[in-house]
Image 1 (spheres, rainbow, N blue to C red):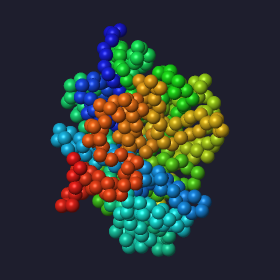
Image 2 (cartoon, rainbow, N blue to C red):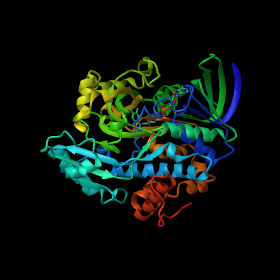
Image 3 (cartoon, protein in one colour):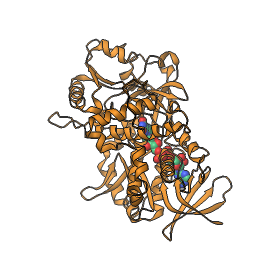
Image 4 (cartoon, protein in one colour):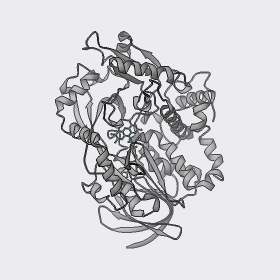
Length: 502
Ligand SMILES: Cc1cc2nc3c(=O)[nH]c(=O)nc-3n(C[C@H](O)[C@H](O)[C@H](O)COP(=O)(O)OP(=O)(O)OC[C@H]3O[C@@H](n4cnc5c(N)ncnc54)[C@H](O)[C@@H]3O)c2cc1C
């Protein structure tokens, strides 16, 4: 076995997370030496591939599960506001890169697509009305429109209104400045940009097979998936950005902080339509409410997708269950992840989440006709011949210890870092790619605290003139940054009033 190259940073996986962190680190320290290791033969081959996720630029504009309603009818908007400002942080990074001129066009990865919420029935309407009342008072949502007028809805969602009973009770909200993001194109653009710099490499068809502590860092074992040859690389810092497969690598690291975590893989499917005669009548991402008892990631939506300059429609997701942690993974992934330290939380989750198990079984058993029935709640006149079933990416939800319940299932993401800051892993799936930049900034603050507040501080302030917390409360600054980003990313045309913060 060849021994031992040395770099500052190894990043496992060439998805949106590693690509973002690698480019960010190179901006902060151009002399840093880093290597991205990817087992597939290209970037964004798993969850970050545009057809493996929904491409929603999550900004809390339409996702009804981000604004839960309490028993007294009030709607809690904290999560929607937080995700909105996190997305604005992502946009700051993308507009910074676009401004540099060497990054390439933003049109290849981000497109303006209005975000709508759509509800049916009296309960749905009273929830949406209350949500609108509370949300539209916040500066991040002040452009939101609300309607119960079917003629207006026919303007907003022309595909979705014909074929409905005249007395059907409906309401909708719309925000014009939502987005569709091709996270695959963005990942590959970031990787190309990265490798144009010295001392930054992306190695494909290479699997990370092991991690060992060395003096102050890690020795990473890497196997060539074509030749079977192995090599070792020493790194001061390792990022496990392996998507669903981050958990087994985290376990292999043996760090104390990895103990007790387990994973629960949920697969997904979509209905996809490429018929231009249908596609041209829908220009929106329309989110509705999940069925009672179903998990948050099952919220149904009918989306305009813009991939490689072409428009399609996507409806779903329909959930499913496999024991694989990656779409291209192994059925042994789940059983092989069971450890003495996580079997308790995993069994507790299995026992306490029978509703979820039943839901997944019912989803898996659905026929194509039943799937079309769900689509027809959105698009009553949908024809079977326009739609085909596609397999989406895997989401590995986090199972973690809980002092009261033994174990809980968590639907968000969690950054797990070694106490000495030499290794970090990203577990979980949602809201995912949209908030990558905030997650990676959190990683930098956790694992490189001295540099973040010292030699990197000025550059961080240049790239990110305003972070989440400030954007949540400072309405004037939010409007200025939002307007600037929207122009820089060509989501709107520049007006004379648009101020520059560059
Ligand atoms: C159905 C679905 C819908 C979604 N919708 C949205 C959405 O609308 N908006 C949004 O913002 N987010 C969405 N997400 C979430 C988003 O796709 C993910 O959060 C994001 O893509 C994760 O990026 P990643 O880089 O962590 O993982 P990935 O893109 O999965 O990349 C991980 C990479 O690591 C590689 N790898 C794994 N193990 C190894 C190893 N041992 N050695 C080397 N390489 C390895 C894999 O091959 C892969 O390329 C969705 C996800 C799913 C599944």
